[in-house]
Image (cartoon, rainbow, N blue to C red; front, side, top):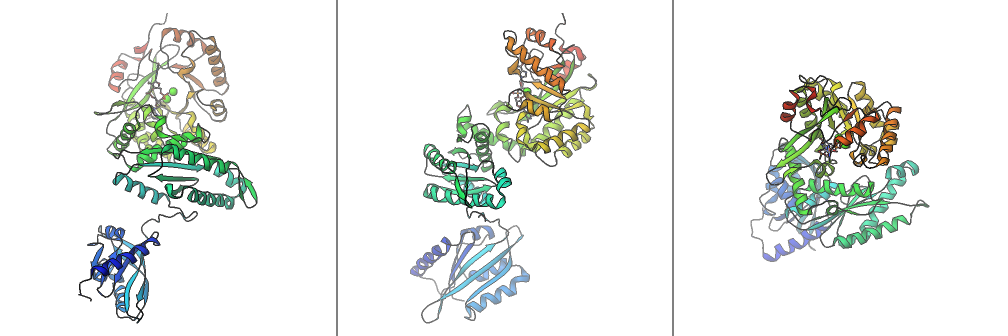
Length: 565
Ligand code: C2E
Ligand code: CA
Ligand code: CA
C-alpha cells in the first residue's frame, strides 16, 4: 500500500488526533492510521504488550496480521482490505493476538474510517480492547480499581516519583449491608466514590481497592494537606448522608504512607499502608494513622528493611530462623516444652526481632507461607528433643492471617503428617488479635484442631480488651499470662490479686495457666503458690538455638532446675 513517505505536518496532525482518541479510550488501546501514507501510530501499551517494532509504523496492518491467530487471520485480512478498498467504513471484530511468550489474548478491535469532504478516506482509527488484561476500572464506582492502583504505583516507583498514598475505608460496611441490604451498601459505595472524585479532584488519583476500601495517590499534597482533606471527608460522612430518603451516618478509617525511597516494591508498600489502615480501624477509632509514626526508626530504612525481609520469604526463607525458649513445669522446674520464636537476620540489618516485622507482614499474602515454614521447622527441631524429654511439647505462634485461610487446618494436618509428629505434642498459640476473625470460623478451627489432639493456647492474656470474652467463648487448653501482669509482683500486691483472679477464671473454664516473663527467683517463689502449671522466662533461659537447647536437654529434664529449696 502507500509507499510514499509521510510529511511532518501529516505526522503532527496524526499525533493530535491520536491524543484526542487516547483521552477517551479509558481501558482500551488506541490505533490510528493515516491512510494516504499507510502510516500509523499505536498505543505504547499495545506496542509493549505485543512487542511491536515501534509506536509509529508503516504498513501496521500487515505487521499486526503476523500476531493474529492463524485461524482468525483470513477474517482479519478481509476486514482490513475492505476498509482500504473503500468497501467498508468501519470494522468490529474479535480475534486472538499473540504475545511474545506465545500465548494468545482475545481482543476486540473496533475502528472507523474518517473521510474528507469528497469522501476520500483519510484516517482509519479505533480501539483494541484486550480481554485477557484485567480491567483497570471498577464497574460499581467508575474509579480505577486495584489493578489500576498497582499499575500506577509500580509506575511511580519505576520513575522514582515521590508520592503520598492514602487508604480510606468505610467502617462496618458489612453491618450496613446486613441492616439496610446490599442495594443500599452499593449506593453508599457509589456515593463515596463520587464524593472522593469530586473532592480530591486535581490533588491526586482516586481508586477503589476492594470491598469498602478506597485509595488516593498524590504527587503534590503534603501529609498535612492530606490529613486536612481526610478530616473534611470524614466530617461530611459523619453528619450522615441521604440514601433512599434515609440519613445514614458513616464512620471512616484511614492510613497514610509517604514514599520517597524506591528500593521497595509495591507489595511491601501496600502491606505497610494496610497496617496503618488497620491501626486506624482497631486502635484509633478512625483517626488517620501515618505509617512512619508507628515506627521507632526512620521510615525510609524501615520500608527498605521490610522489603528485604518480605523478599526473603520467596528466596527460600533466607535469613529466617527459629529460637526456642524453654517452658518448665511450675512445680518441679522440669523441662516440658519450648516456644518457637521467629528471628530474621542479614548482614546489613543484623538480627531483627519479630515484633518489628510480623505486625506489618501479617496481612501480606506471603505470610501464610512463612507460617507453614515456621510450623514444619519447629516440628522437625522438636522431634530431636523427644529422646531426651518424653512428651516434649512445642509451642508455635500463629498470626490471625493464617487462621483466616480456609485450608488452615489441612495445612496443620499435612505438616504434622509429613513430619510424623504426634499432635498431642504440639501447642498452637493464638493471640487476642484473633477476635478480628469471624468467631464461628475461629471456634470451628479450634474445635477441629483440639479434636485431633493439638493443644491450643491463648497468648498474651490480659493485654487486649476482650481476653475474658475469648476465654468464655472458646475452648483453650492453656492460658498464657502476659509478663506485664507479673513484672512488679514482688512489690505490688495488686498484681497478686489479679493473678489469683486470672487463675480462678482459667480454672472455671478448665484451662492450664502458663506465666511468661519469670525473671527472678523471687518472682518464681511468689507465683508458684497460685496453682500455675508452667513457667517461661529469662530466669530459666532466654530464647536459644535448637543446638543449645539440645545440649542442655542431653542432661535430662532437670537441666533448667534452679533450686527447690
Ligand atoms: P510472645 O509470643 O509473647 O513471645 C514471648 C516474648 O517474650 C519473646 O519475645 C520472648 O523472647 C520474650 N520473653 C520471654 N521471656 C522473657 C522474660 O523473662 N523477660 C522479657 N523481658 N522478655 C521475655 P520475642 O521473641 O521478641 O517475640 C515477640 C513476639 O513476636 C512474640 O511474643 C510473638 O507475638 C511474635 N512472634 C515470635 N515468633 C513468632 C512466630 O513464629 N509467629 C508469629 N505469628 N508470631 C511470632
Ligand atoms: Ca507466644
Ligand atoms: Ca506471650
